[in-house]
Image (spheres, rainbow, N blue to C red):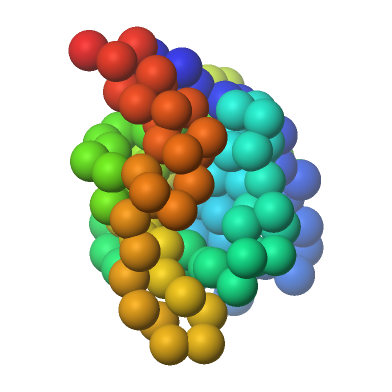
Length: 141
């Protein structure tokens, strides 16, 4: 399985009254990891957006195991869990400085025309993405 590891700087403004990272910020970290994963494949969201296409989240699952606090190290591991030509499911683990899983989850995405939100086939609209994703899934088998 091809995972991309992205270090995250835990900023004070990301913490809550309990001194731990506020739960919604982990979804932002997922996005940071997903963007780095895509860039690692030689692809770029900005290139997709030049064609008036965006990739919204249609489902998100998250599981909290351990808190991460300000000043601690954090790493987001990201990989492609599933891909069928239309939907892409990315998986994530956020590790603390000791290498323990603090948070895990997935996000599911489709691509749509930005102006109409009409769904598109990634396979047809962006064959280079399709090939890269297909290679990732074959590597995961």
